[in-house]
Image 1 (cartoon, rainbow over the protein chains, first blue to last red):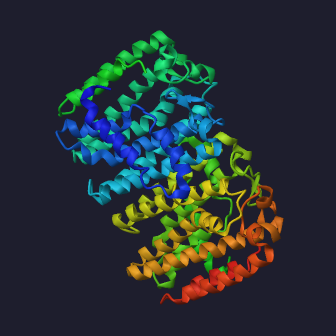
Image 2 (tube, rainbow over the protein chains, first blue to last red):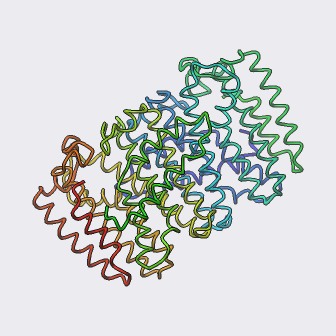
Image 3 (cartoon, chains in turn orange, blue):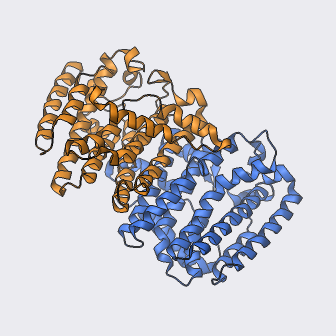
Length: 293
Length: 293
């Protein structure tokens, strides 16, 4: 990640660590399993987004920290459950054995449940700390539960499970709109809500979030084929192994690459349309555009 | 259940059914799996409690319906995940094949995740419908996420997984305090919050909830040994099969029965201490005390 994000990233890590500071003596096992995955050094992309949106308005990004922690909890829970034997049965994630390999399936299942539940706790905590008022907190609860729920991320997972046989572009975009897009959109929207933008501008941020989700997913699918295993921290070609519907399986590698370039340009245009400082998010987008992991 | 509860129970069923009325065409699978377990005819005990607390004050119980639905979603999610092969590996629940037997493990996992997430959506929906204000809604989010989370229900599950070998009374009561007690306590507390009681009276309801949780669990453990399989809808002796720590394994059947009688009397005394109409909850408690399922 660009070094300009260091202050934000270290605040995020600090906050995520602090979640595990009051473990009751007899419940260390569940915290250990949750912390193992939550603190395993992800990019913190989702957490950064609302902070960068606030920074684009020249506003204090600290007020977005609790929703940022919650976004990471939701993302991590989805990875833990996704890796389980009954789902993708993956044994490596971010260069480390997956949660169920270390803690067993039962505890991994509960660690995922615990992180999902914790996310909502953190959303309410942010309002207790006066980072935002109760109305904003409840709005976040509504956005999170919708975007992570059955007609959001979970629905996308279901489509993913049943996708293997089909190879249609509409299925692909619908699946990703739900599976990764819904939560990414909310990450932008939370920034907009905290910045108290107009409704029109909030809609622009949502559109940017949707665009960003597509861009990010095409790139993820390409990296699964072309990436460096040691940098990615997971085996290359796992989508192919699992017979997954991806942008590469659907369009071929070269076409997927040109789609990516196209989406990147649309993303920049969408950002330009919003009357804010461009630097913070431009920096993120261009860094991501060159990422190898 | 007593026929005096019919109006409440039919409202609860109606509301739970209505959760599945706007399924997008391509996402019917996840709703089907969630509905299968949520609408499989449980006692709706958790949902009834806040309604009965409001009724004890002579207040309109309809305002507690959304939290009541949320309680049922949380309870059902915990049952689905609890039944999975990596947990208790149970194949029968409420007289029907368990969720993963019907839909497969992957979809059962996601159906549980979906119900947990939906609970928080329903809590926010109740305030959108003006059943309660945003502050109460956020307070419910906080109570639910704490009581269902890692230091509540999920923590209790973890203790349960690791309980088999031990046989100590302190472990037993701690496990149940978290696993079933935490959410039952919240069910009473929600009623008190909606009734706008004094802080002292809210504490009395919480204490009643804790007592009720102990009473309910001892009875559950006894019924797992003495119950009628066809009425219970699940195999008798599954606790013994799974080498679970229960009140019966800890104290023996006869001692457990006398503990139950003792707890029932304490429960009635605790209710008498609260200056409300006694009938609604007395009816529930005495019916439960005689239940065979």
